[in-house]
Image (cartoon, rainbow over all chains, first blue to last red; front, side, top):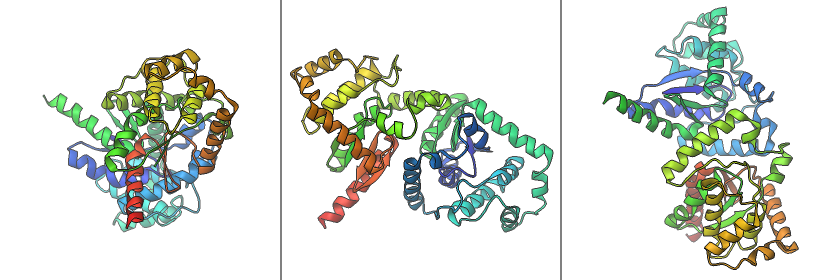
Length: 199
Length: 199
């Protein structure tokens, strides 16, 4: 199962904290897929988060997210800037998406942004997260290489081609499941198809 | 707990089939609240369903709804016209929202629209649903009275005042829960507060 996420996306935050355990418990193989919502929102005519464009929806989302995070016992502090630009963090995540440290890196970026209102668009913030994981800061320059930029661009294009229009989205057998609320449905789907294959 | 629904809303269909049993099992008192999304969408700058305005979202929704209805074992046939105008049905539902037959009337209107692609905007269709419940057809003329129209208008305004921006929405203790996916969360919330009051 693929887990498609974007660092500016609010509901991707709890999803990033649930997905590894949920997939592991179900014996479903998990692939992390960072991408950018910006280009996808632009195609829908949005130059901002729909939660900013539609205030009633935005007010509801922050309250709802509060309830979701409370249940999950992860901190939430409404970022002083929303959405934050997750481009840099996404490039790191995309270039190193198969590394063993990747899930923990992703969770720490989300925590920084939504738990502690840290500015994840800044190199210094990403460097400090890499250091907290005992990773070399020069991963950042690799992530800024033309190859790395192209990789994230291609991944975002693939998201669009899959029919992804928001985050988080779970993909299994080219079936898409949108939203943190759909995690369990996606896992059940993936399990059923893995079982069918192994028969 | 209040169940706010609109007859054109796709996810209100499964919610209408789940809400009574779920609330009953939990011992939560249920109030049915028909309203119109049109005026609320207009304030957000939409003259059509967002599922029509944003095609990727719309394609996903129909597929997702298929999965949801399959699990619930209720029929789904994508209506040849979407969204259908539920004004007439909403007036009936709003005027008679406390009647014992109301929940079944609501479910049959949803079934007609989303299960059998019947044109619920037509009087004949609503009359036939009323008849199927052994109810007199002249309820329809009562629903078309100025008082009835005013009641639905006021109810829709109250929806907006509560911060409702979509359907279905569950309301408990002025906390709002948006979407069929939030039914259980809303019920748990309502239970907790009823228990707190009875202590």
